[in-house]
Structures are given as structure tokens and as C-alpha cells.
Amino acid sequence: MTATEQSVALRSIAQAIADALPATVEEAVVTGSVSRGVADDVSDIEMLLVTRVELELDDCFSLAAGCGLTGLGTWGTQGLPTKRVSGYRDGVPIELIWWSGGHAERAVDAIFDGELSATADALAHGIPLRTSGLLAQWQERLRHYPDELAEAWIEDAALKWGGFAAAGFLTLLRPGERAALLEWMVDDAARLVRIVFALNRVWQPTLKRLAERAAPLARKPDDLAARIEEALTEPNPRRALLVMTELQLDTLALAPDGPNVDRARQWLGDVRATLQAATTRA
Image 1: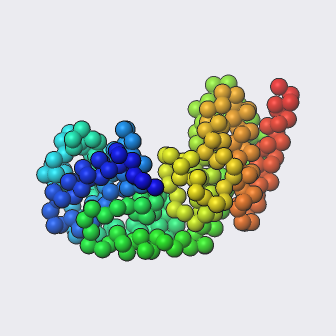
Image 2: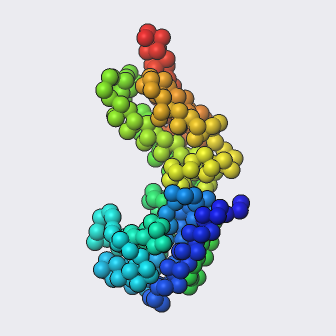
Image 3: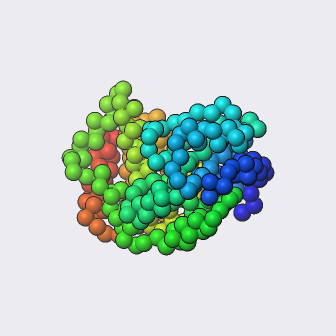
């Protein structure tokens, strides 16, 4: 796929940032929409910067300023191995993630230990702007998606679906409970995406650009992204839940048998029947 013009322009800015960094930064990797070549007019630049030793946040701020970033800020929990610095360069929002080499290795190991994060997807599609060879090593590891890891994530995703009476689902249909309904369904959507990407042995992305990310997958329910969108925007709560439930059942029909998957299939079938009966009574 040919990168968008905006991707090319933003990658050039990212390269200028990488070129301005001192030698203590061993890896400068652009990630996100820029690395995948799909950036548009509202895209920012996301970069992973790996240093020989762990830096203090103040050091990261100083280095970011030295790269021409202005309006510096940070986000998330502080005092952890991950340091985050945001800012602007040439009017473009920038997000810099700082890791030490040791933390980077632990983060990659954690992927294969079953930790759920966006790290695998980000690294798998990352583009090195400066490298000591670490990114290539990580990407080589990520080319193998263990079957046992996929099975564990599928089972974990299905764990939520079951364990209480299907009729209890109707509490989400009460007037004034839209926030609770959407909270439930957004979590359902994330679990569905986890299952589908695990089925295809592809590292799970965020929910952004889901239709594009799911399009090349061989094993998936029909119209995955469109049906999630329909469920989340359907004004009728009963209809919204029914759309999501049917999508869950179609997804689990593709999954391998397992304790949680088997239970979820039965339970979601009961939920669907309960919703259909409630619709008939209404």
C-alpha cells in the first residue's frame, strides 16, 4: 500500500526529531498511523525512544525541547519505567514514549507471557528512524504468534459472557441506563476484536481504523466493524444489544472449543432468546 502524503510529511518530521537526539537514544521508532502509512490531517506522530539507561522525566523533557518540541506536557501515571512527553513541532502534535533498553526487553517478553497491550502491534509495524538493531530483533520475535497464546487470549476474552441469568441482561434496558449499556458493549467490542485477531494470529490493534485493520483477515464474522458501529449507535437499547449479541455468537462460532468459549456460546444463545422474547412482548 502506498503511504498517504500526510504519512510521508509526518515521517519527515519524525526523522528530524530522531536526527536531533543524542547518541544515548539507541532506538527511535515511529509507530501508529504514520508507520502504517495511513496518516491523515488529524493524525499525530507517535514515537518510541529507547535509551541505554532509564532517564528521569526531566531529562526526557530536556531532550524533547532540544529536538525542537514546544508546548511540552506529559500524561498518564508518573514514576514508572515508561516516561511520556507530548508537544508540538511544526504545528504537529507529537507523543514520545521513552523506555530504557532493559524495560523494552521486558515489555517484549511480557507480550509472550500474555500481557494485553498495544505494544506488539506498535512494534510489529514500527519503522526505525535510528536503530542499533533492537527493533529488527523484536520484529523477528513477533513474526511468531504462539498458538497457546492465541487460545489463552480467546478464552480470557470469552470469560465475561456467562455466570448469571440471561434475564439479568434486561437491567441494561432500563430508561436512563444508556451509559451502563454503552460501557458494557464497548467492552464487548474490545473482546470481540481480541478474539478475531487472535484467531488470525495477528497482534491486536486498538479499535481505531478497525474496518481497515480487519479487512485482510481471513477468519472473521461478516461486517465486523460495521456491526460494532451499528450496535454502539443504535438508539433502541434492545435492538443494540441484540445486534451485539448476534455478532458475539457469530464470532464464537469461529473460535476453538474451550471452557469459557463453550459456556459463552450457551449463555449468549440464552441472552439472544431473552432479548427476542422481550422484543415480542414490547
